Image (cartoon, rainbow, N blue to C red; front, side):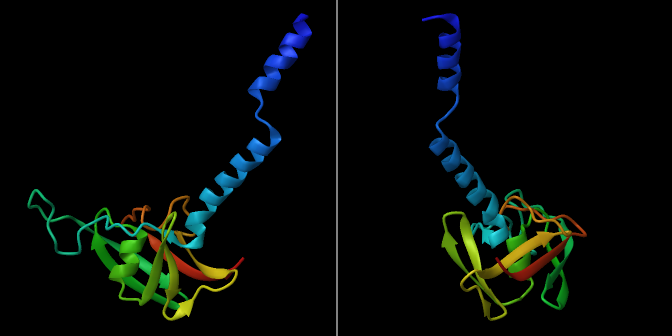
Length: 150
């Protein structure tokens, strides 16, 4: 083989087939979309308010504002809490089901996800790239849950 043919063959081997690249892009898009579709981790990430750490020390708390629809509520949660912990601590009725990306918030205040509509969340006006069970809130954060159609 001549040098040009060898270079072309080597470049072809480094470039994945189109089908593989499309599948990889599709998988990446699905993973990136999961947090915006209300995906949450069902695993508890922090002890409930007033509980102690294993070392016996109290955890500091953070104050978070949660907005659902037209309602707004200040919520105190332990330091290290997630968006899902805030939703639980707020007293707002919600339902979730486990999915491949963690729990999926299927209903808030009786309004259920259906068809191409469902619940999504943002923190300080930005949609995180992780699910609500992964995103740790900080003091002063504003968590907003919105019902959207896709």
